[in-house]
Length: 317
View (cartoon, rainbow, N blue to C red):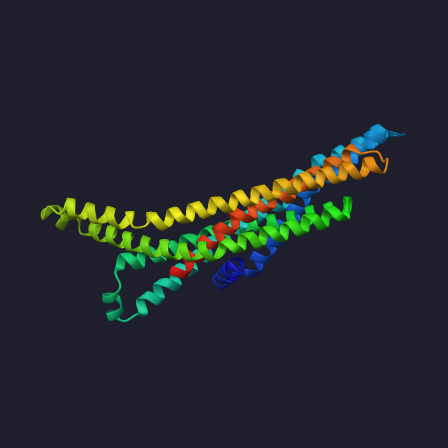
């Protein structure tokens, strides 16, 4: 199975020459900001447990925990803000280097190649590839956030109740395999959608660049009908792609909902069975980290879908 993220990262790294060290630093800063974001439920759990237990100097302990909790956003943005500026700046140069490379490659091709390949089709391919690379390079922090949240939330579930951690891990593996199962159809359909889109865009471009001739010879109706026919040719496979994608989301949603129910029920059942007190803070932390763990799979779902699109667009370029 193809590693879409790895391929896109290699392409990004290739065109990031002169800015690679900054790229590594920016990604490291994103990891630090995500750790600060994920510390929130833990600090809040400590505070709620402390309130439930009570004891001496309660107000002082709660105040310090509140100060720590309130400062997490500052530490988050201390890393995230500058890293985003660096990432978007680097993305600009990556796309610039990519377009320079594509122009150089196209300009070196013989005249016969240019005669055999429609300029509108070539423009469509380069624009799609450039746009996909821009989107990926501009938003690399999203994938990093998903990875960090997955690791920390799973670790927190293991810490609170190891058997629940194993359950979450098993369900997580199942969902990833489910996503990969849909990959074969989605990738093949996206390639076909892209090819049909290139045909439509080259036809559209051809008529627009020769609009004077079209109007003079009164070919508007013919041009319109052919353009509509080409775009309508995309619809059948596009619709199949949409239906399969929704089936994927339904299966993911049902699996995650069942996992959440089992985790919460098992935690409460074990505490009651052993006669232990259910600490509000600990249960809240379990709920929040489980929710974050589940949300990472929703993000994995749509981010993976985006990566498939980006990869398909770049490969057709």
